[in-house]
Length: 164
Image 1: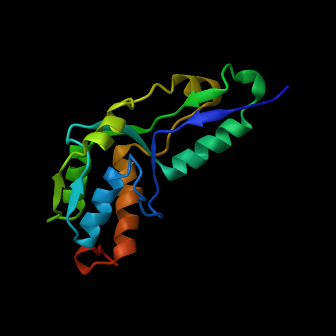
Image 2: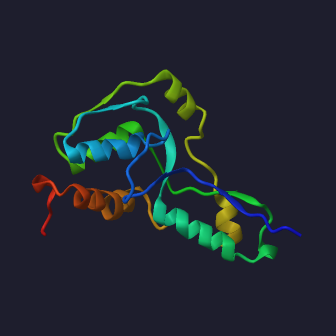
């Protein structure tokens, strides 16, 4: 018998790698541009909402599923979720962290169509019930404890320094 297990991830965001043009990269791109003092034209509408997850939670989920006893699993593929927010909410977080950020919305119909085909959020109740999935990062912890501090370290702009 083959023991196949898989996870369907939301948009994954790492604080340590640069966005590379992926469909869900508009959020992290906003923050990187704001930290660098660059203008950013977001390629989706402000009301666009999809699920995201911090990379440490993605790694945690892979390890948890791999370690789950086979007899407890009723499925081979599981959705997992962490937080869902709109492009407008991402922009608000960028403005809070980097006042003066210049972020506009210029939706690209092709890319918007791809994002519109994705769910706004996913149901991860099976993963929670069968192998104890629970993300460590909600939206506030993601921005406040993980993403924004690492972006500040990366760019080291004097106006971004906290009590160093």
